[in-house]
Image (cartoon, rainbow, N blue to C red):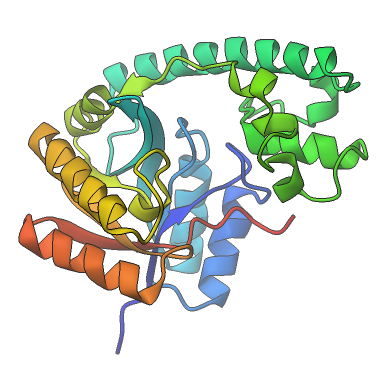
Amino acid sequence: MSFKTDMHLHTYYSDGTMSPTDIVKRAKGLDYDMIAITDHDTIGGISEAMIAGRALDIKIIPGIELSADIDRIGVHILGYQIDLNNAELMETLNTVLKRREDRNERLLKALQEMGLNIKFEDLNVRAECGYVGKPIIARALVNKGYTQTIAQAFEAGKFLESPKAKAVKKQKLTANQAIDLILRAGGMSVLAHPMRIKGLGIRESKAFYENVEALIVKLKKMGLSGLECYHTDHTHEEALWLVEMAGKYKMHVTEGSDYHGSE
């Protein structure tokens, strides 16, 4: 019998649309044996998911997805089997939250200056979560009738991808800090969806593959343990190349859907 896993799932504690319990119920219905809750920069939904996992007999891995920078390239670092009570982790996540809140305030102001009538109250933020990422702002733009889909809110040159909005930056962790934080919390770090990383050239080009490999080498030296080889947005050929890279550099191979729920 096969052992079915999904190591990349989001709940409404970050930018997903489903509760941790409903995510676990969905996974059970799809016959998963083990899943990881990897919300962006927060561990708020993990305890609820673990309770549901015990009730439904499905193993829940405590995880997180940290936004980070390396050489001005934005990357996402997944952390698995982290200690939810680690003091350094909690302190850092509080700092990251404050930085995000500052960014969001400036981003909403930029959108307002572009003529969009959008306020914090329009974002439908859950009181127990407090997380606001760009996808949540994009959903608000859809609800307000400015765009028809979330994807349109991220079209080049428009709304959240307009020069004015893109000029609003959030101070991120460095990749080294993110990897070290995960290690100090007893976890294992994995590079999320490597083929989606922007700023490495034209996807599928020879230069892009060379730049991805060079990035993997740098992150490996920092302590990165694995690669998310199988991802919804990776082609079969890309996944096989990443598996080859994982073997070449003696790293773990993971698979994740990056599921955020139905819109």
